[in-house]
Length: 563
Image 1 (cartoon, rainbow, N blue to C red):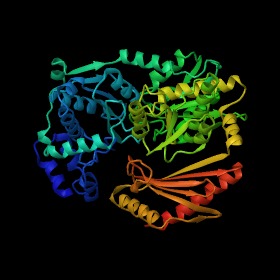
Image 2 (cartoon, rainbow, N blue to C red):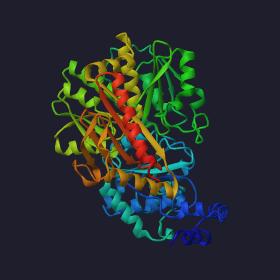
Image 3 (spheres, helix red, strand yellow):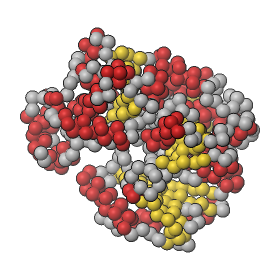
Image 4 (spheres, rainbow, N blue to C red):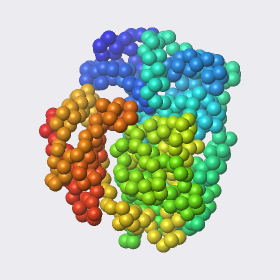
């Protein structure tokens, strides 16, 4: 069916509820909107689903959620009774319809005879990963759109190791979804019936308690200034209770929460775009920081898997540390302290994404620690932790990517804003006791290892036309790479579609220059964006900053020439 036929099917079929039909009737004269909603099915990828909330096949709604869940249920049923009894853990965030979508998923799974463990309220995404491992479930689902704008929601699927599904399971689920055919072939029962039959079980505080205790066991040092002044904002998301609890139980006595952003708010009224990677998300926290004379500000995104921080400088202003800087600081903090205790594993490994900076790699080399690069996304980063469990080739120490996602150790197989918030606070308190700030520590690292600077450019290109332009941009860079930028000469091109590195194939291009600088370009996997990651290396800040500007100018000029 073409998009108009799909639209008319949804309007006329008895299967779809009246509210959905009313929403679709309201756009009957807007062909462009109809096309955007129905020109394709919302793609089930290796992270599941993510899209705008609304009626249509290319939207997040009760029908696309139930269809995906039936595909997951069929995948689990093929693994037999034991897998069905192990069941699926489900968590959800603060977004519009997150609770409703989690219940729909539970109802579909229960209708297929699969046990469900559903959290009794909102929870951070990393707790879902922990819970899968704690309860030994076969799979997990979290309803979240992470840091996307308020009109988005998503559906992420995890497998038994506690990490997000990789291509093999994703393709199997997708094939099962395609085999379902009509929406009417989806099995679903009443929620209360699922509870009554023992197929749906609520879980809560008992899991929280175990998670918090294990996180506290990950502390690096107790030689810290627990009086450090911290302002924390959950950005109206799921981090509020558990981040504050971990900080409190670690002994931090001066933690102040941004009141306007403390409680759940699916509209993210005070912040708009709830991504702490964007310094604008810190506006309220900065005001609180100045009022409380805070040393650091910490913000987690709505599902609390990402975390960012700002640090007060000597002029009393707050300076943002980006993901590359924070990741390098954490690698240095973890390895230097563990080295003092003689606790660095001989086969240890740091895992980072291919678009993450190289400062941490240089630091790790000082401690004879291997750095392994994976494709973007923690499904790949923590996939290495799963691989190490099997092969024993390495001990997973720390994983991170430049987009403010970090995880330490292996109790969680995903980026974890709760663990990372504790470590950032602890690290800042450790250096405060030594009389320096995190800003001063990162400068010490630059002086020792070289100035590794970076810039991320995200260009939003929405709709069908935007998708087509992104394809043309990637084709241009792939066919005609920029070979010289000022005095930087291209020495290597990596096309991840050609599987040159042992990673799965991916639409990413990376260009390395003879001075250690490089840039990469890729379409976003979750948003209508194309991203350019620019990295420079210089003997001083001025030179490194100049190289960033040169690479940016050359790449943007090329992109603007492609209409």
